[in-house]
Amino acid sequence: MSSSEEGAAEDKLLRKTSISDEVVIEFDDVTKTYNLYKNDRGRFLGIFNYNRKGSFLGSVDACKNLSFSVKKGEAVAFLGRNGAGKSTTLKMVTGVAHPTSGTVKVKGRVSALLELTAGFDKQLTGRENIALRGQIMGLTRAQIKELEPGIIEFAELGLYIDQPMRTYSSGMKARLGFAFAVAIEPEILVVDEALSVGDRAFQRKCIERIREIMMDETVTVLFVTHASSTAQEFCSRGIVLDHGQKVFDGSINDATDYYEKNY
Amino acid sequence: MLNTLATIFKDNWEWRKQIGRLAMFELVKKSRGAVLSWAWFFIKPAIYIFCFWFALALGLRVGSPDPSAPPYLLWLCAGIIPWFFMQDMLSTGVDVMHRYPYLVNKIKFPLSGISSIFTLATMIVQLMLMVALFVIYFACGMGFDVYLLQVPVLLALMFMFWDAVSILCSQLSAISKDFANLIHAMGTPFFWLSGVLFSVQDINVGWIQTILDFNPITFFVTAFRNAFYDKTWFWEDTSMCVGFLVVFVATVVVMAVIYRKFNEEVADVL
Image (cartoon, rainbow over all chains, first blue to last red; front, side, top):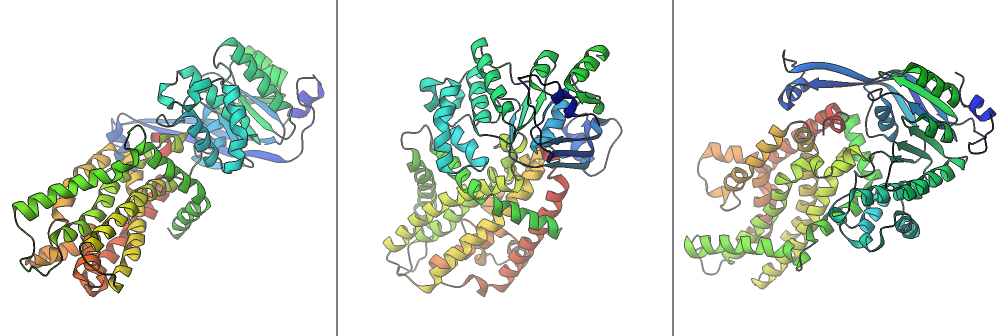
């Protein structure tokens, strides 16, 4: 596997240069299959292995025999068309989806920028949501108190921070989601097309912040995008997925070349 | 199966802090937006109790003819307050995944813990109502005695049993809306057929008695009434205890089987 070493070798200032040998994410022959049914009734019967003709439409392998490992401190871009299995892969890294077969091993605290606007409780205020999420991540009260001002400032919510989340615009929710995810000093940061948040000024701020995190050599970053330029800017290694299978794994420039040529 | 059971215990223990805090958030959320906020936890049950007391004690005159007996109101409250807990568990508690979708597929959180959050939150409300029940109890001129020691035991049993029911049913409800609807539809029959408003011992039909021995709602309602009103120990009624034990064990077994089978699938279908 020609991995990050090559990408790191072309030492470009923006990229990380050193990577430890510790493997933090390991996918071993991972397959994730979704069974599709015509309706919920069909799915219910399917649970009991009763797949009646007509109701069971077939199954889709979102990931197929996927094997790779990521070392601590690496920044890996996942490239691929819609439906290539990128998001499913990241979901398995965050632990909310489980592989149908194979094993996924992840070490360290994962912070995910998947669908930023989701995952907040609409009845609670922004401030309470920060506390709530922090607690779920296992932070202590003191740690949350410490992080709170930074998050609120970054999200630029002003007075709205003490209003219930249901009154927020989608941009505000996304900003808060982003601010939280980058504030908790993750060991593994998962970014799924999250950089299209808010207006241009905020986007710049986000990119700055992600760059800062990426420069930190202990943080591992997984990055999903369609835009090759963003990937090249941030990452040192690229993995190209197609129909759930890994078709290319190498330095970021080779990966983006491969991706642009073939897709 | 024992492995699954161990996992459930382990998850709940490891995440106990988060579960505790999330339970508090659940209560904050419930009381949010109302001027009387926390008072509503009492007002709703109070109105409920008043209606039944009015209809039964004044309207139908079902109270004991013996004037020296403790008031009917106490008998009613001792059964209906535990019912409030079970009612919440049967309506919302059996479908908690849809209440906290973000814990299922946005954040890594043990699914059995979600049931514990809701059960704990409901139990905290129940404890507040229990305090009210004790106030009523002493206001009725009853004194403190050893039979009351059953109350904490029963509350703990109630917590464990309904947490297991919630874990079991929530998995099924997440996968099938039919199941959720079925359980919701059962709310009213459970209330009227389980002896919340009448004494099961007074039914003189043998087979009905036998069936009700296996009804956990009947068990809890009767046991609380024994502690507060009738002053007997709940294990004195052996057939009822055996019935409850059978149901408890069966629930836990089915829960472990279902949890192992569906645990990993739920996030995909929700």
